[in-house]
Amino acid sequence: MKTLIFATNNKHKLQEVSQLLEGVVIIKSLEEMGLDGEIPETSDTLQGNSLQKAQWVWDRTHTDCFADDTGLEVEALDGRPGVYSARYAGEHCSFDDNVNKMLHEMEGKTNRKACFRTVITLMENGVPRYFEGRVDGQILTERYGKEGFGYDPIFMPDRFAVSFAEMPLEVKNRISHRGKAVAQLVDYLRNNK
Ligand code: IMP
Image (cartoon, rainbow, N blue to C red; front, top):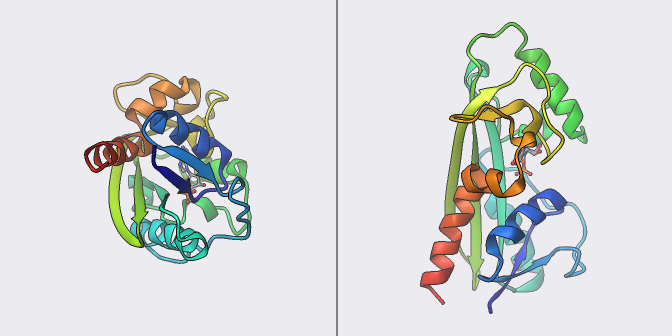
């Protein structure tokens, strides 16, 4: 089976994606590869950031790898925080800080439409290929649930009555931005063995 390094230090993402790629490829984490240090994310697009992360790993290992970058785009905030979702409440802020800021900025807003978008870059032999996923939903007015990470407690996907943080991982993976992008990656990997 093919081995791919996943360019993330986020344990939640690693768990989500490992479940989706089970039996398709062997995933190695940065930790397992002994790679540490801050991966750059200085682009102003999701595709640019995900390419930057995959390129960072490729340059150091010359091993096939992939990276993802995700943004939460909120209609009432003109698409913010988008590509800046990780640093929404400032450099080195926590998931909690970001959620608090979002709840505050959305106070009193009736249009609560939002979407998560993910771009995955697969780097094979140094050549990038992109996969995208999107999920639409609403920003809730308070936190619900303990699962997941990031903005999960305040995001309710369309056609569901619970937040991402109230769902078992299998359900989130079936409908989420990252789940959809990984499903395309899986299709590609299965058809190009
Ligand atoms: P990243 O740059 O792709 O790691 O993600 C940008 C920001 O979006 C981070 O603050 C994450 O917490 C958040 N984020 C990414 N994926 C998800 C998700 O599946 N649920 C909730 N928040 C997420």
